[in-house]
Length: 132
Image (cartoon, rainbow, N blue to C red; front, side, top):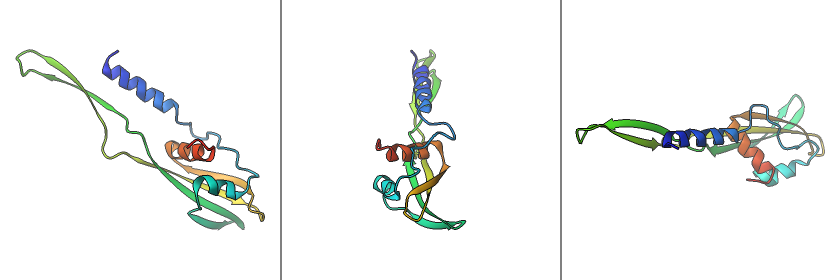
């Protein structure tokens, strides 16, 4: 298998690991907010939204660098010589996800709201599931 084909296969495999938009999040409803704090650390802020209390976390992660294959032809020896190379973008991209957990009077989660990139939210969901 050529390097380019190998890189494309690897990229397709990595993309398959990213959940699509609207992917189900770990079940947080009914759990105490302390369960989220245990996995994600203290919330970044606390908000009052429509008379409800929401705890807010913003999780940032570095997206894996996607290899960029390229091919060039050199005629240095007088004959064509094909050279395949792979480079990586610099610097790595930062992905983020914001989780808002709405709680009742006993600090139990009643609902959640996720906003951000698939890669950032996937990382946060993995941490909440105890896998990250």
